[in-house]
Structure formats: structure tokens, C-alpha cells
Image (cartoon, rainbow over all chains, first blue to last red):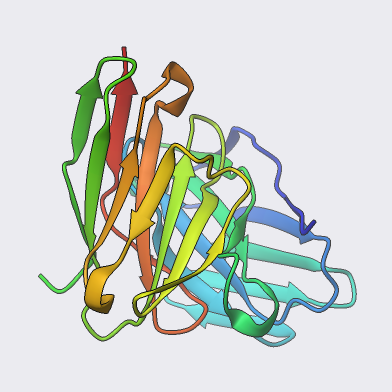
Length: 113
Length: 111
């Protein structure tokens, strides 16, 4: 059974600072990883995907992947109050097909103005 | 709008009634997933379609749940004899391969 672990938080970060969100996963053969943002009462929105070791940057967001440590993180630079949300880490099934994504429980991020 | 569309957005039903939800995926995506999400949890996989074929069902999907995707286009999820434990957000997602794009969800409340 694939497992994805996240600290549920809340994680409180001052506006303008860097928010760091972490995720560990159990399946060593996982090849791709996704970060979703979910506002309260809304559905998850895909914000980052990462497929290889190292960093991937997209605007204020940077995803970091370390397959040897089975660890993926999301950094949000210059945090804004609008970044306050729950961030979900997700791992796809082997072979990229059935079973759907396995999600962590999410980290609740609060950006303090 | 070419995103994933779900209907209805909210549904309140009495225990024991049947409900049906609809999902219209992104047209070029042949993969469609249903998930369920309860408060404080991540989405949990329910079932998967590739085109019109239902290829996988989670053990969470009891025999009161049935899903269809006729002609590989829209999909429906029906829950028969609803129970209070069925109260949740039901999410549909479509996918070109591994990443999933979610609809707005249907929030079901069973009273």
C-alpha cells in the first residue's frame, strides 16, 4: 500500500517569507510527483509536477525532489496571503495508469499579513 | 471553459435515497477518475475509466456505488441507499496520463 506523508500543520509563515512544505512517500519506484493547492471548500488545483531529481522552478514556486531519500518539497517564495490554503502532495500509481493518485492529507498553510 | 465540469455542485439528500452525479471531462482526455474527500483528508481514489472501460475500482467502492462512462465521454456516479457516512465531496478528474485535473466537486450531505 503506497503511503504519502505530510505534516498537517497549520504552518504559519509571515507575508514575504519563504514557506517550505514537505512530503515523504513510501514507494521507491515512484517516478513523478505532484503538488496541488486546495482552498477551503474548493477542489484541488495542480500547481507543480516534478519528474526528476533536483529542483524545478515555476514563478514563486520551486519543487524539490530527492528520490534516494523519498522526499519531495515545495517552496513558496515571497509568500502572499492568497497562498493560504492546504497543499496536497500526490504520487501516481506504477505504470501511470489505474488506481489513481495517492494523496497525502495535506499541509494547511497560513500566511500572516 | 474547457475544464472539468461537475453537476450538481451541492446535493442534500435524506438517508436511504439514491443520488447521481455527473462529470464532463476535458474533451481530449481519455482517462477519468472519481475521488472522494472528507474533511481533513486528501482525496481518496474510487474508480478509473479509460475511455468507456472501467478498469479499476477501489475497495472503498461498495456495491451501493456504481459508475458509468457511456461512449467514453461524460461519466456518472450513482450512490444507492445513501448513508450518513457517504457525506463527502465527490471529485471527478480527467487526465492525459498521470497528472489529474479536477472539477469543482459535488458536495453531498446525507441527513
